[in-house]
Length: 133
Length: 133
Length: 133
Image (cartoon, each protein chain N blue to C red):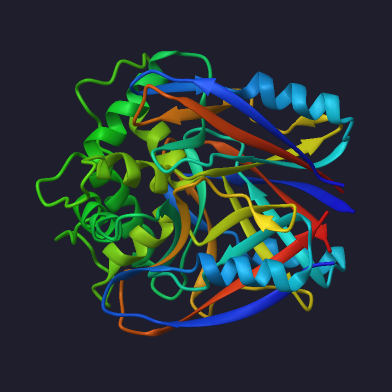
């Protein structure tokens, strides 16, 4: 049985927000021992991603690196002027799969789960769906 | 029970094609109320992605932004000369997960599903697999 | 029932490693005829990706293209100096979904599955979880 839950997060203009604890809690509360979780971002100027969890600079560096790869271009025609944020969102992706093993998210030692804002500040949503084997 | 269906799409040299309606119809026809769909692109010079659905310029901007991030490089050695298309495909990704809630795809208000061509024109395929909870 | 298996891979400083055979074998050994596999990389400076399988130059080109899109930047502040590898990892992604149809991975003719190293050499791990319909 899949369990779908909705969460909200308040963001700055741009930012990288650690949601690992929320995902872990949702898994524990579900009681699912083996399966997987889908993390889904229903926005087209934000994303979800895995990244390192020890050094907070990694988040700022991620935003800088995405800006460098996908800068604002003169050729962009989208009337809102935020095509760079749309492309960053599509490129990083709106969904993550987190495997569940013995009731815990199966993550690497330094691996955490992040909500990434490219066009805030906003109140954003994300979903966690837990699927049992 | 998972239901796997195959679809075809005719593409231009490059292009961004809205397949949201096809995904929605496949979900409705499956009768699945809760679960998820996997959208899979079996090509290495095309991709599937979420993006905004209101302004058609967003598609053209996505292609331009991907070209800028992953241009043709002099150092590329692949004999077909389309390494830029391969990297765009790998970067954007070949699979999407779409959550199904109460019989509908769970998407943001402005969020749609796209097939993205980087090396056409071709007749392409994509698969939709629907998994019930 | 989901079946989770762990694999190891020895990498060079950077590299693109074809793991399609391992995935196919894991699917065959599971006996699952219809479902999907999740390939998961628990590292934040490596990734998993689909790409073409015929020309070995495609792997080298992928690394070159990712270097070009996500170069080392002077503004990076992460103390380990490998923020470019973290961003490449987040961008390419840590998970893949491979559909299983009639006991085989559903891949395009030229489509294979790769483990991508951005910050080796290391002994890396990856997981394959097989989910039956």
